[in-house]
Length: 140
Length: 138
Image 1 (cartoon, chains in turn green, brown):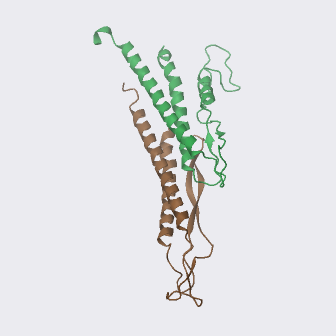
Image 2 (tube, chains in turn brown, red; image 1 turned 60 degrees about the vertical axis):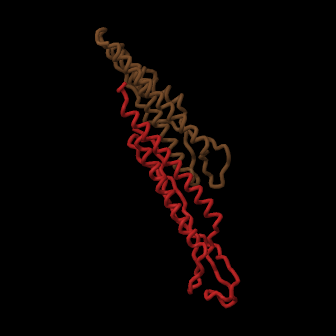
Image 3 (cartoon, one colour; image 1 turned 180 degrees about the horizontal axis):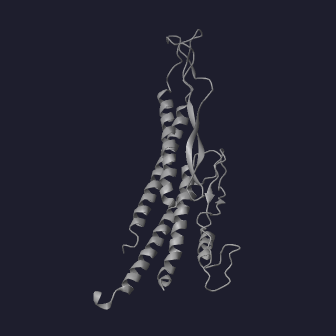
C-alpha cells in the first residue's frame, strides 16, 4: 500500500540523481576547458533515465536472478553508478586537441540546472499533494 | 551525491587558473627586465594543465584539473641597441626578457574568464544543493 504513495516519487528521485550526475560531468568539462588533449564527455540523459527507471519496474533485472513467481522480489541493477558516458563531438577543431565546446557546455549547464530545479519542484508538489490527501476535512 | 563533487572539480580548476594568472603576473612584471651580469635574461613561463581523475566513490569518473608543469620559453630575449645603458654588451646591445606582452594579456583574459566560469558553476551547484535541502518542506 505504501508503495502506491512512493512509486511516483521513485521516478523523480532517479531523474534527480541523474540530473546531478550530468551536472557533475558538465562541471568536469568546464573545469578542463584549457587542458590539452582533454576529451569532453556527455551523457545521453533520455536513455540513461529509461535505463534507470526500467530497472525499478523489472525490465532491467539482474541476469541469472530471474523472477519465477509473482511473490519474488526482482533484484534490480543499481544503474546510477555505472553510467555509459559518451564523447561529445567538437563543433570546431582545436590546436591543442581539446574538444570542450564552451558555448555548448554553458548552455547544457543552464539547461540541466533548470531541469534539476523542475524535478525538485515535481517532488515537492508530489509531497504536498500526499500531505493534503492525508489531512482530514476539518483540518482545513 | 554528485553535486558535492562539483566543488572538488571546480575548486581544482579555480586553483589551477589562479596559478596560471600568477605566472602571467610574473611574466608581465618582468617584461622590461634586462639580462643580469651572467647574461641570462628572464624567460617567460607558461603553465600546462592536465586532467586528474577523482574518486567519486561510486565508480563514475570526475574530471578535475591540475597544473602538470610550468615550462620556460627558450626563445632568445629581445635585443635593443643602447650603448649608453650600463647593461649593454660589447656591441652595445641590451638583452631584455623574451616576454611577449600581447601573449600575456591574451593569457590573462583567458585565465580570468575560465576562473569566472568555474566560480559560477560552483555557485549554481550551491544553489541547487540549498534547494535540495528544502525538499519536501512544501
